[in-house]
Length: 98
Image (cartoon, rainbow, N blue to C red; front, side):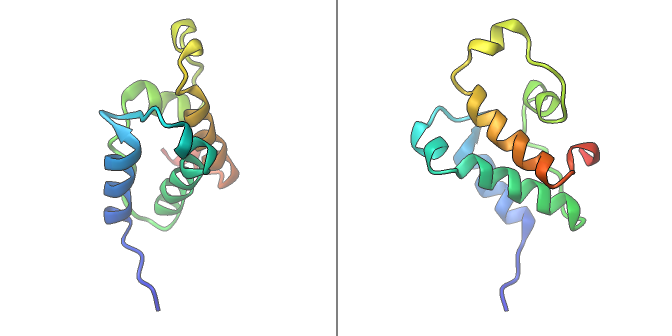
């Protein structure tokens, strides 16, 4: 049986995909669906009573729960990564828990 430790998983997600709370600029990670997986890890952690992803920058966290980006952020190349995470969190209906 595999034991999932969400604290460790979120630490890996933070270190590898969210430098300083913002998504890393990686088209490889985006194309591979890594940001979608990050959203799944965050969502499953919340749904199963684990820790919340407290490493996200305030504007990223706000966007993930439905707030619009400011016009300057709309041109940010990392927007697609944030959208991938947001869409996956929405698929688990956990945005309201964050």
